[in-house]
Length: 332
Ligand SMILES: O=C(O)CCC(=O)C(=O)O
Image (cartoon, rainbow, N blue to C red; front, side):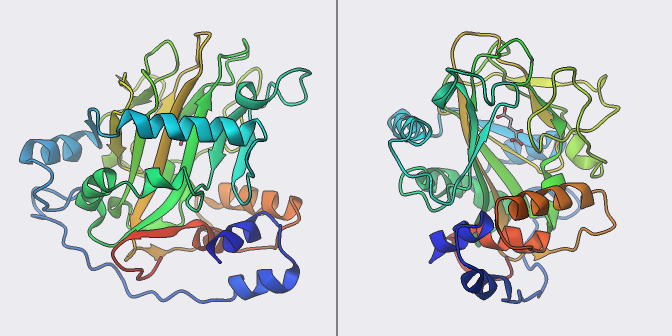
């Protein structure tokens, strides 16, 4: 059933099936998650799995790196699954496969060299182990509370940059893509699948920027183009950035308003990471019409229709792609 729901987004089902999934209303009863000592902490919850120092660091900076959290043997299994999917040995099903803009249609470039992202693997038998991993969820719970939805899953592959610098990811805030709130009960877990350095395109973040507002996002005017949906903010070129160099298995948890991006891969090897955005299931969907998020909503809706899918509300797209991974399903 859930896999069928995913397929709806990408137009693999007939019209009757699609209607069945888009009609269901979602209750809206507000968020009821304990939020820690309000005066001191607002971005983390009072949970003994985070030390006071870890909480204070996240509150101040908007991110927290947990070294060596994810076992290497699991990462190797996920990497092999990625290769099976992009090299045609396994069915992609309802997942979305994205390709580097500068390499589409180039002869002889395929598979791992071409595909820069697989999204929406919450129902994949193998990759979904990442978003359900208890070691990760134990940390996630410190930000979301006990009822956790996996909202957005990605395995991000950065092939060696072909000289176009299209492997960069512009500075952005993930909340731009999300029609659900409150932002403080959303967190991303991003795991390095190998050693990630400044040379192969590590994440960079603007520490403390999670305390700011959601900014206007648009496509950057990069000379050789930019990958689909890679919107970015303007005016932050001089903001001090922290480069997150990480070892295989290290996982960074970060707030959805934190400004972040990643550099180009200047090596001759691949750089992979696997991530999931989680939200408290108490979160509410919002209507983004008339806000800065309207541009991404329209773009996502248009892509679905172009692929033969139904005309969906932006929030319905998100209702269809999420999965309860701990606790109870409430609003999301
Ligand atoms: O893994 C990366 O290079 C950056 C990914 C990212 O920021 C995103 O997809 O929102």
